[in-house]
Length: 398
Image (tube, one colour):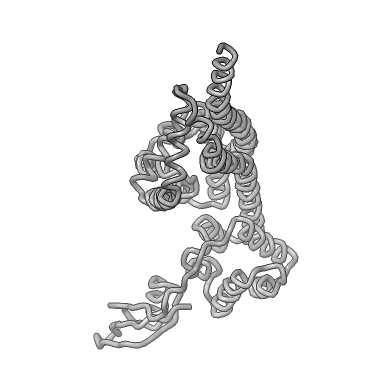
């Protein structure tokens, strides 16, 4: 737990200073209030650790263990101790779990202890645990969170698995082209030099081959520079916003991406709303889990419309990046008074659709990349065979 150096005022008006451990400034304010002190200033003396976020698989296992053990009647502190002693967790995860356990043992709520691990736990799990701490039923909420992150991990694994073959094929295309231009084509230089006239494709191929042989080092450096430039440009919010907007408007693929983003949003919104969190907070948190900055920024207007009294279905229907089915499903839930049930239903439906969308993306990518590879190899073969065939014709005619 961080240590804060504070300046406060007591009931007599005297200034009091000191150091006190607290989860955050709000917690420090409450602790000082219990001592009948009014906080004037505070400074965090604890250096912020270099934390990295836990992966969906680790979050699912973390929540599942807490939910299962608490349902069996084991106290929360003992659950956390058992989790940190599990041999299956990594050293980094063990350190995080021990830090959380230490804070909970000092009387800090579990959600606050998790929030103090800056960047480790997403706001989704923190807010769901905080809501369950207020209303009870932490075990049920933890198991629901585990189900949420298990499905997210499964979806991420399918996306990565689906993209493995296209990545390998793309790498092979680059490798084949580099070998042909750098090593194969130079072997034909002496043959082609003896020919008086060469076809245009052959001249183009020889020019590219000569360039690759002479400037291969510059090409490699240029490729690395371009890769790093693209990598860092994608980190800029303005560039990321434009790319994300283009992504959902690409013919064929854009519709598939919309299905995936809708599924992710629907599942998160369903989990948060079912945990009893206010709808405005649900929208704010769920928008940050979509994974598309263009869609996320539209939620400022969605939240404003919902706060002003507009129905959730109408506000969601204005978002460019979701399939229209989510708007009609939410409207049915609002009219029937069973929004939580309808959110669960649309989440399950969208997850099924997203799995099909991933399969369709791979089905589109594979033949396209094979055609590209075939076109490159075919062009090279034509460039080599045509002049040789022409030379044979000339020999036969003479």
